[in-house]
Amino acid sequence: MTAQKLSLSVQYAVERVNLPTRQQFRRWIKVALQRDVQIVLRIVDEIEGRALNKQFRGKDYATNVLTFTYADTDQPSDTVDFLYGDIVICAPVVEKEAREQRKDSCAHYAHLAVHAVLHLQGYDHENEPDAAIMEALETKLLAKLGHVDPYEVGRKSRG
Image 1 (cartoon, rainbow, N blue to C red):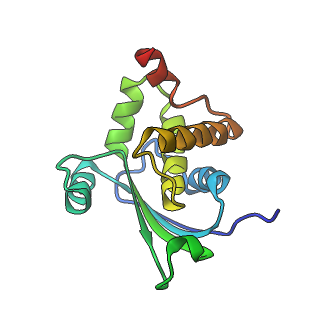
Image 2: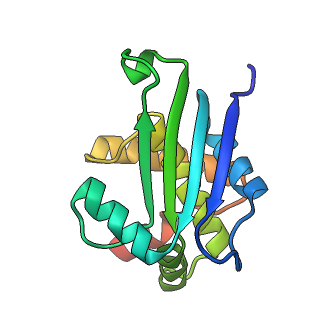
């Protein structure tokens, strides 16, 4: 099996204090690749994150991660070999969630990078069966990276 091709551009639109490096993001993204991709990953502040979430999802708050997929052709995305997309991660939201959930912030960034790349490749969590598939895959991929199950905290509080 050949490794998937990754073209990655990382933009830091916030101060680079305690943020993952381009190399870390690259490693996390590569573990989740099932297809060749070209990605622009932008790390933003809460103002930009909120504006993008409002503009594209109609929700007036900053969310942790947004994923945008683009087609370079008129063909359906599942028939195209190379995917193009943008990932936007809102650093203040990620840091706040990590603190609240008592997670390592680096592990949380890794989870969101993997999560976004799976979205880019067509995975979703809009219903329970799809969510179960996506969460299981995320957990498996994060284990390969040496991180614990990111959903463990939520399962404990629900159970």
